[in-house]
Image 1 (cartoon, rainbow, N blue to C red):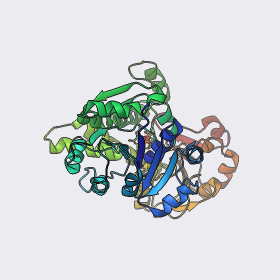
Image 2 (cartoon, rainbow, N blue to C red):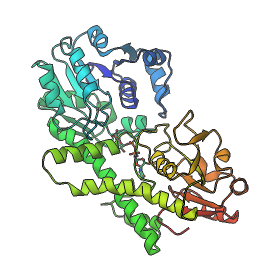
Image 3 (cartoon, protein in one colour):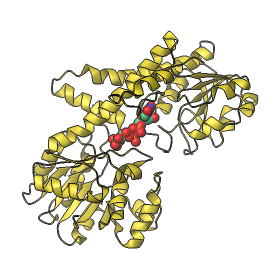
Length: 429
Ligand code: UGA
C-alpha cells in the first residue's frame, strides 16, 4: 500500500467520504475546505451531511491521528512533508448552458500550483468533462506533477459503504505509474482496478451516470405504457430483472430521477455531444422522458382532483430527491411540487429529513399534518416510514380518499381496507 500523504480538497459528501474512508484504511489524510465554519465543525467532530457511518469514521480518523481538517487547500499542501496525492472533490455544478462549471476546480489548481511538492499527483474526483485532466495539467504547467482522473461512483446516503465496497476503481492518466499509484491507495479494498488514459476515465463517469439515467427513463416509460395497457410494472420488472444482462437494480419506477448528479451529468454530456456536432438522440430522449414523468405525476393528481388543480389541497410525503438524504438538489419531488403549485394547488409537505422554509409549499414536521385536510396525498420520496403510517388515521384526516404513490411503496390492501384509493405508478389502482 502506498503511504503517501493524502490531501482531499472539498468536504462535501464525496470529499469527506473519500477522506474519512482513506483514513480508515490506514492513510494519513488532511481534508481542506474554504468554509471556516465547516472546518471548525468538522474539527469538533460535527458532520452535517446525512451519510450512514460517516460521523463515526470522521471521529475515528480524528482520534487515530490519521485525519485532520485544514482551512484552505494551500495551507494543507504547504504543511505536508513531501509529495502528496491531492484529491479534488469540489463542486462542478451545471453552468448556464448545461455545461459543467469548472470554476471551483480552476480556483483550487491556481491556489496550489506553485506549492505542490515535486512528484505529487493531482487527482480529479469531481465529475469533470472529458479533457479536464489535460486542461488541469496545462494550468499547472509543471512536468513534475502528474494528473490522474479517478471518478467516484458513490451514491448519496450510502457513500461510505459504496466507497469501502467498490465494484471497481477507475484511474486514468497519461502517466501510467501515477495512475497505478492512485489505484494503490485503494489496495485494502480488494476491488478490480481499471487503469486507463485520463480521457477514458473521465468518460466512464458520464457514460455510467447517463446509462443509469437512461435505464430509469426507460423503466418509467414502460410504467406509463403499463398503465395504458393494463399491465403491472412490478411484475414486468421482476420478469425482466432475472435476465442477468438487464439485472434487477436501478429499475424502480418513480416520479423521475433527480439529485445532484444524474440531471447535471446527462445535461453536460448532451451539451458536450452537441458542441462536438454529435447527435445523441437517445440521451436527449432520456432527459425529455424524465421531464415528462413529472408532468405524468401531475396529470394523475389533476385527474383525481376532477380535472383542475386550482384551490386543491395536496399533501406531499417526501421532498428529498430520494430516501436516506436531506438533499433537495434537482429533487423530482420539488419539480412535481412546482408544477402543482403553478396550477394553483395548495401544498403541505412532510419529509423526515428536511425542515425549514421552502418556496411554494408549507413544510410541516409530522406526516399526519401533511395529509390533514388534503384532497389528494402524493408520496414522492421512498422513505420506508411512509409505508407504515396509520391508514385509519390518514383516512380520517384527509378530505379526499386518493393517494398517488409515485414510489410503489404503500401496502395497497391496507389502504383499501380503510377506504383509501392508492394510485401507484405503472399498475392498476
Ligand atoms: C448517482 C449514481 O447512482 C452514483 O453511482 C454516482 O456516483 C453519483 O450519482 C454521482 O455521480 O456522484 P445519487 O445521485 O446519489 O448517485 O443517487 P441515485 O441513488 O443514483 O438516485 C438518483 C435518482 O434516481 C434519485 O432521484 C432516485 O430516487 C432515482 N432512482 C434510483 C429511481 O427512481 N429508481 C431507481 O431504481 C434508482
